[in-house]
Length: 113
Length: 118
View 1 (cartoon, rainbow over the protein chains, first blue to last red):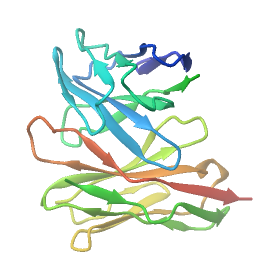
View 2: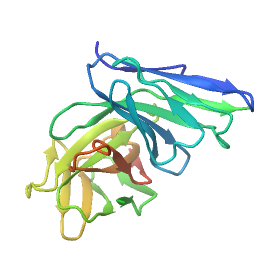
View 3: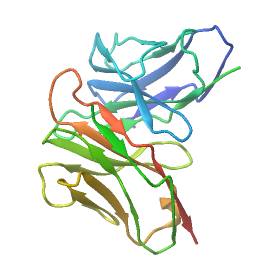
């Protein structure tokens, strides 16, 4: 089945540690996105990539980094510079075409201990 | 920059009844796309319905329909014959139709929690 997978589902990190969240898609989509969701707020865009080896900062990129070496993969690293990393992280990819609608993975819940 | 506002943090409806969720947005662009996403307790985001700004006809998907008022910058979602499975957080989202490096970027509202009572 085609889809977007994110791993792990739950992730715990100690303060000062970097951690990488995985996002893989087998939908052959060119564009991929990372969002952060906090309680009582909507999704906020962290980074996005429209094509392999290219990516742009979203609205809240500080303290995060990404890479896009393969079309299928768009990992997100939460660095120690991110002051409040505890949140729910969602990865998405989008269909090329008129609506360019986005399809989402199941998410990763990151908790900093 | 575009903004999306959902003024109803929570809404409730009786099973089989109709409910309308509100969304307003601010933009200076003339062509854009609007979406409603549903996030059930599993937290999986699911696309419910979409609308292009240049289409005057309101989009409909089974029990879900929108009331798109371009001049008022309003994009409300109507759920008819509400079912228990409709209980979720609903997000309104905006996407510009302009190309460039920001192409494809979605701006989300804060969400509305919908409770369905049996």
